[in-house]
Image 1 (cartoon, rainbow, N blue to C red):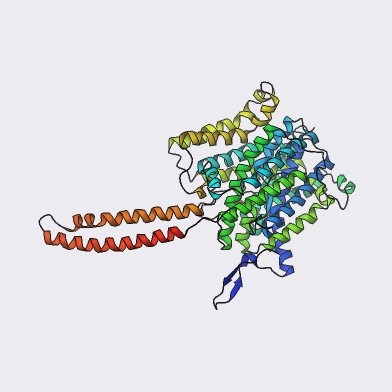
Image 2: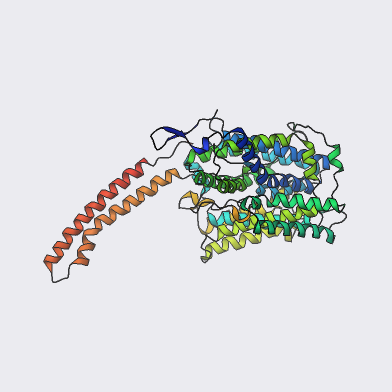
Length: 555
């Protein structure tokens, strides 16, 4: 069993930290199921959107949903329980990242769609997962060096681009799904609009927990209305089995192609920023210190889960911010609640009938819910950019030009379909890829790598507002990459500045205290200043000692 952290209670005895407290079984089950509810809609919507875009059959879509839930459960248990130096041992739920949706669709369509496209996607996912896992074992300095490529102006732009690129995906579903006979039928937009209105009203008027599951309730109510009106078909539910296990490489052996792999590596760089931010956020909420080793363990769990996802027919994984917000709202800090949620997800992943019900959600209803979710992703990016000085022309250029690049595939699709090599098109025919690459390169050209604390790399994770609206509140201080070593450097710098001030203090105090004609007064002032300088110097020595103690744990 994972190590249980202990701390001294008021009477001097050791007590278990709330994060490591094992609650009674009924409470574990109740709170764990609550996490599943908050997470469920965000978990299943990615395989539904990707599977629909690749024209998979209903049976294949059911299998994708089951595989996703099964892997989500396993990944969450690894992250919360911990295996050796893998897993943050914090209440973090793992789910498929929205960052990968648009790139995976681009890879899949470039590979011709269908199950053949899945094989190319899985090859890229497995490779990216292994690379992330390996990267998280590097020394902290190497990690910070990469994180300095992602200051707020870059992460804010990338997250905004992600939301903007995904919104058309939701709108296409709202219209009935690309290629469907009733695409554009006003009836589909009526379902989408009704679902969206229900979600928005629930977010506005509902209790915090109801707001956190507003997307899920919107899908349930919208589907129920469509069923009553004869527009939701559940025939496949009867055909689905009661029990089904996702087997490795169900659709065939993965194919490893360079361009999709590069694209997925870019996705994983962004998800590393997301997980880093979520790890610091939940650490702040539960009152447990997060250091570079904790973040490294969280990223190793991400990498392991992503590689496992490729093997078990699922997609890249990241820490879900929806559940970080739920921890804040409920104040239930035990990581074993997430372990219980993982067990529930594994059970759901073994029930094809449950997945078949989800797959039967009408496109219009799904589109209404997805559009809200993706719009909130874009808003998360805008919130991050609000912390950037956009009056500075360099930052404004990074944001504006990157957005322009991101819109190129949707605006001029013929460039990628007819005038570009298919392999190159599979890499570049993605607004997220072009926008993210442009933001990173332009920031390096105009601003260079970030010089401040690497924690500023991820002020708001990409999934921060998905599904929980305004109720997901991340800590006020910037969060991001591990920076424990830099804390020591910052303390040393502060100490040096104090020492410098101490050296200058006698002259400044003497100049201020002594009129030119009063030498005695000047001498007195200088004596006072010297005393103050000695106090400042003593303070600086303490600061230096404190800085020396601020070491970086080994990753």
